[in-house]
Length: 284
Image (tube, rainbow, N blue to C red; front, side, top):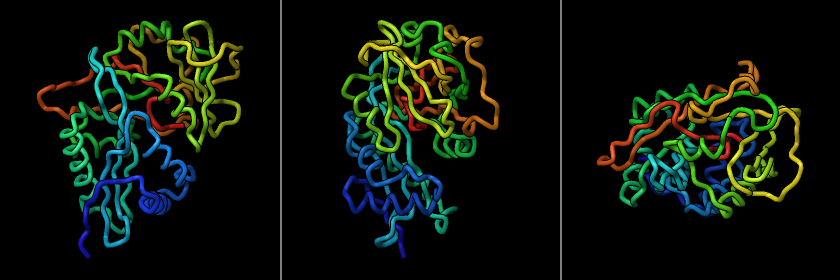
């Protein structure tokens, strides 16, 4: 039977097919539920899902999905995409569906005016993005553990000086914190700096991210050990307060990848110039 490509939608029947495909491809990923995909694909204030699916009759056999995000790239506010869910049924792997789906997504996104697409790829998937889809491998993310916000010397400066970062507002943060698979908590560290926390598989250590601004009610922040996965511009990195996680405790090595969708821009990012935390991708 011929495989047909179609735009990803947030219709209930489509989401059910996505849940079934994810279960076949990633049986251990229990967070990929109907409620989670509804939140991710349909609830995002920055816009609805931009993706393509491959169908063999009524059966979903592959998907590639991105979601809109507001970004700052080289000092400009732009509409970008976050590369997220990609899956191919084991019976259909090796047939080039991933490349076909991604090409369809990027062609559609470019036509709709999106400037670029970024993602956080693990060590296994990074070569597919860079060799087949023209992504740039910008830099690996740091995975470290410590207390508080000690991995960065100046969050305001880091955000201002970064040549690549995500731009958040209260509406988008409210949505981000309501992840049905892992709701976030926010607390003021001090005036002008907010800490976001998410649970991890390690009960003692939660994931931590920080944003300049007063995004939560004032209160005493938790001082338990925290894990940090992300990148800050080189000039604002601090090593002493946080230590790199042992290999056995960290997630698969994660890489920031980037691709311009508008050929005339020719944007390429340099290592050491991005401000990224788990808030900006879908690790927790």
